[in-house]
Image (cartoon, rainbow, N blue to C red; front, side, top):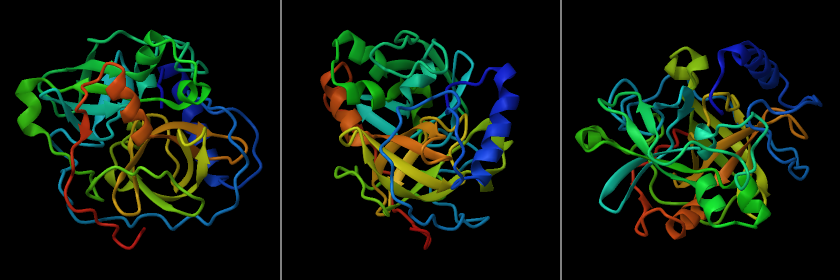
Length: 301
């Protein structure tokens, strides 16, 4: 999630493993790094089994190139890229807006939280040159004096422009699963399956731990966010990673880990809403998600 300070990393590791083991326990506490607004209580929904230990190569190789799932660092804060975007003749990788935040861990209201400025360099694993922060929803909302509380709470998207010299190395397929094949525009209902690919450095570079499968527990914030339970849950460093619906459409961007009222669940910002906002507030008007080829649910969704 929001970039790890070394001093907090030990506490994060403990919270991650306790949270994953106690996914359905009545544990109380606050979410590390990104404390989200408390969602409406959600129904119990069975979570699917973990992804298998190995899967086919579905496009983007995890060992090289620029693609969804690579690590990105903004002023030392490590997050995970979600999708590849194009607009205005340029190519972008997406990350969470809070990845460039400069405030404390519990400053999550995008309409008041501080951020590094546009143009800030962003290191991208596999790139020969840093990208640069080209759009940040927090900065956009503050510039627009946004008053919609749901947008302020859940609009969490940033775009990092890829240096032209690195554009030939970009592939848009999500590792392991493939896709996206389009954008999900109708949100989720409890019980819908979802998949994701996180790449937190806390996994120690073990790729079989990156694919995640799970279940939506429903929408919140009038569709701006979706609560999901995955095996395993998103952990610090997974922030910004891509979520896809069961038919391979780009659904959302990982934003927070929730400890209450459903311990170990995540909140993901709705991509369709965040893209619509971006197009009207400083991002290119033709901004779009780049399709990633066939989606393979592998029997998991």
